[in-house]
Image (cartoon, rainbow, N blue to C red; front, side):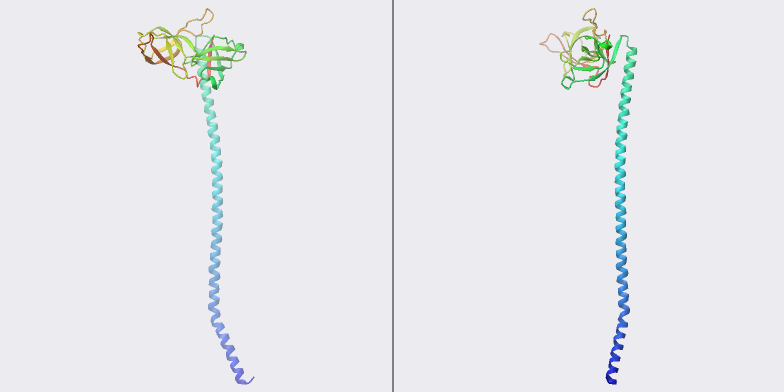
Length: 263
């Protein structure tokens, strides 16, 4: 290789090195920029993912707390309802005891323990029987009024016929007038007092009480003038000899638990 060719090669190498040196710095800066930018973006994505996971965990923990609080609230409501029921029963028993102590006629306290869906308004079963002195034919009352009569007795229980039974019959008196009649059960309609003459001055609101009539010398089911019902309607039918007197009983038979059998 002559000196001229060598000189040309040297110049080419120097030019190449110079070009590479000139472009190397901007390309390096650009590469560094790309690295930094993408790295920061990837880092930010990572942070966001971590934050999202943390938020999701917080939500799950919050839902778990809500579920636990709801369960605790339900348990408290159940406990509260139980306390209310116990308090109501205690109050009912207290009233029954006070009535028994103040009532002048000897009674046997009992509780209703059974009812048939087919005869809900006709009869109930009580937790006292012949072993407790309960006898067929004896009257059954609460502190509010007459509710029935003993129909059947076993050793430790008895069946009570209720005043709502359409077959129920009982001698009663309109206390304001001193007038007697026969009370007849009529469920699901209002009970009626029959044998009240058309010229009688019966009025809505008149009190109906027990007549105190004895079936025989040894069986007087109810004391005289004990509350039974109140007149709610008086109908005058010209074609009838007697008035149609509808009454409402003082005691709601669907809510009572404690009753008393008269001795």
